[in-house]
Length: 496
Image (tube, rainbow, N blue to C red; front, side, top):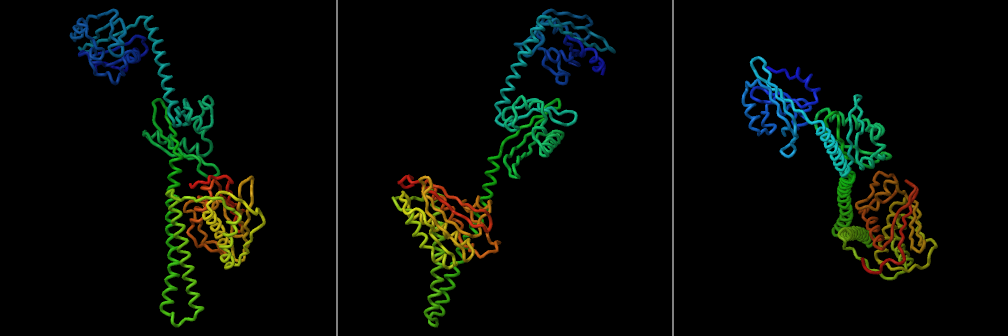
């Protein structure tokens, strides 16, 4: 190469004037930083481009001058609109062209000088543009709904925050002025903050834009989930966006849990169908084959097995039908003014034989004598029977079950208390949910684990349709439980 760009750069990079050097065919070899700023061209992009093409020169005298490759006469042109960005932003300059001959080759050093006043005006125009751009950039950053951090990577590898938006402040719990110039690992405290910084640096150093996942925990439970996008910015900068995907991920987790519960329910329902069917089928087959040889007592015993199997099947089908009605919004209430105390006593009497079979003491405690309110008597009795059956099944033989009807701040209140195996906190959160049957196969206690697991869910829906609420209280395993529901006295009489 005839012209040493590096040698010229040492000199021309410090000169205030714009300098462009071209070869004998007017192809650009060099632009100093000043020329880059005034033309809008970077040296690497401009190299090899013809000067008159880059500047849009259309003056005949200049075109003729540059058309003579061996021209050794300098030329000066005053106030020529040669530099600038586009046709509408040309800048008046004085252009001086100095031909230089090196090893039989002619180079042209083109020097562009600006008027001092014009230069000052341009500086202010540039500052104004920078200000407008900065404000626009700030508006853009603040309009991003996700948390955004712009950080500088220090020599020690830590990432200092240069800018961030309001969602970023909310994420870190700091005001904007308090977040700036902090380090990422300061704002995301603890081991996870260090890990996050290491992951971001590793991703940036690989030279790719990538995404990570960041989770926040409280007492070992996930409270927030973020998808973290990382993108490179020149001059040791990095952009980090935290997109809150908590709701999305939680919904995915819930869907997986519902799917698991649904599968468990289908398996359990299949078992619940199979057991009474086998009872009915086996007893029927035995009677058909041996009827003539059986005494009356034996026949009655097998008929009772068939009746019990039928009842279990019927109860399961009714639960499935009610579940379907609730799930599709087709469960309707038929309300009228009824005495809740009477409904409770009728429900208690209907399950006394179940309590007797398990040698339980079933007692109605003193309380309100009469509470009239608008209810669907059939559905409320269904709820009470469900709760009593649950207490009878989950209380070991010889247990105690107490029922009481009260008034609490004008609301009708029913309490069903047992001294059975009770509930863990995790079970209390689950029992009223759809497909919320609790697996108690591993509990070593004399309890009845049969049932569809739909009864408490259906009971909850019925009580809520009456404008009430239902819940359970328990101090833990083998410490008993108390199921409670309340109904307001003035819930709507119309069907819902």
